Image (cartoon, rainbow, N blue to C red; front, side, top):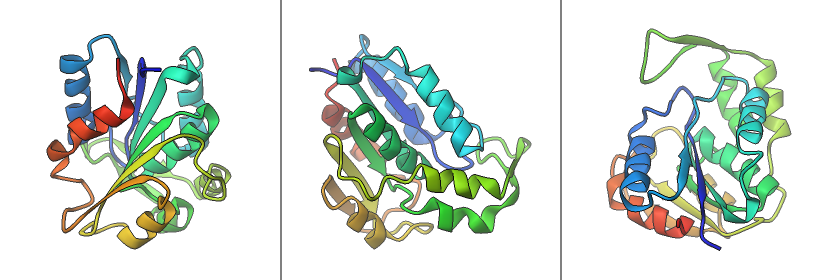
Length: 194
């Protein structure tokens, strides 16, 4: 069944203003105007973020929903895809954010709006652990785009985590996937939008 509803989940300190989110939204508008696209601003609490996403998508038909997630949003997308048993695309996904974000506890700024601050609380690490679905097999088809040049996350760890996905491992690149414009059409095609 074609996808009628597409969710995009941004990464840590990111927002719906990210280049990848904006590019995806533009492609959906231009090429798939019948599809519903949602990229919410996620709160810093992982539990609150996924509660908001679950509530905001509760009326979406599971059989025609897909999700794209970048970095921490990729970790969230894996959790969401397990809940909904839907297609998912992970872009340089965080594999173990409970470990990696320990050093970020404290005051943070939004990447796209440095004047906006939030506090990453110690208990958010436990909330991340509660959302970890690494031990489960994929519930539906997955795609992962992973850059070997990612300066924040280990590409080998990502590739191992998503070994069962349709994998694109890019030589070079960066965490932001600056060359996403070369892959956005393939990502949209994988999501099978109406």
